[in-house]
Amino acid sequence: MNVEIICPLYNAENYIENLDRNLKKQQNVIINKITYILTRSKDETEKKLKEISADYSIIEPENFSHSLVREQAAMISSADIIVFVTQDIEIKNDNWLEKLVEPIINGQAEASFSRQLTKYDNIEKYIREKNYPAESYINTKSDIEKNGLRTFFFSDASSAIKTDIFKKLNGYDNKNLPTNEDMYIAYKIIMNGYRIKYCADSIVYHSHKFTLRQLYKRYYDTGKFFKQNSYLDKYGTNKSGGSLAKYILKRAIQDRNVKVLLRFIPDMFARFIGMKMGKIQ
Image 1 (cartoon, rainbow, N blue to C red):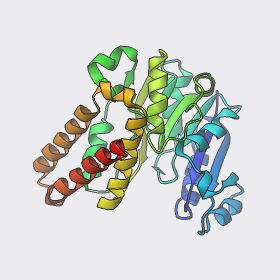
Image 2: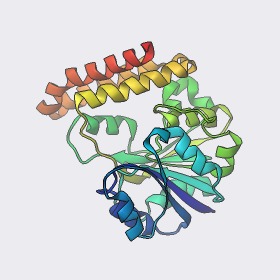
Image 3: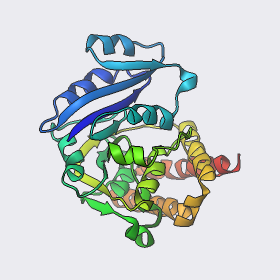
Image 4: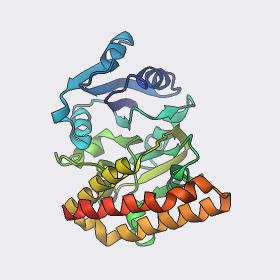
């Protein structure tokens, strides 16, 4: 099977050279194409894309959509497998892609996603621990009763889907989703009887240092997504968030991580209020 890698870009001048280099050094996988979609900006991303002879297109900021940009590229792909990545992942190993697509090629699953680690010793460290464990697993429709909303956990920071399945399911249904487009497609994959494998041996670093304002905005968009897709609430959205908060607090206490403990209440408050306001608006 061959692969097309699809990556949206915006203000990516500090990422694109390393990202492209690490994508191209992947071993034991036939990369049919690497497609970049650049949202027009004032930095030097386009200049760098030209320097590395990249295959890219440009869209205007008002035309950007997390879901539609990916969908439009995927729908015209001729590859067997589409791989979605974000510009800010760091790939350390030359077998990241092989391990990501292996379960699809071997018939274990129709979609897969990578383990994400962070460089920072902040709250995100414990979120990554909880969401991306050291052991791989496969989720199917039969796991919903046990796992609830976690059954549809999926991240297109580094993910793969069989192209024919993506097209058969009509991608994101031509919806302009504010965020969580990965959960939207994961729900469709699972509910249609397909399988998603979490690949703990396919590793990327994905690190953030969000301000409280940025966190509020992210969770506002998440709340908006859940309002638009309220059918997901029955799988335990509040329970999932509460479980994550408890895990973060427990691990920060175990590590005596004072920085995280001091940040914990304002951080969780920004997430909680953002989610609530997004659902109200």
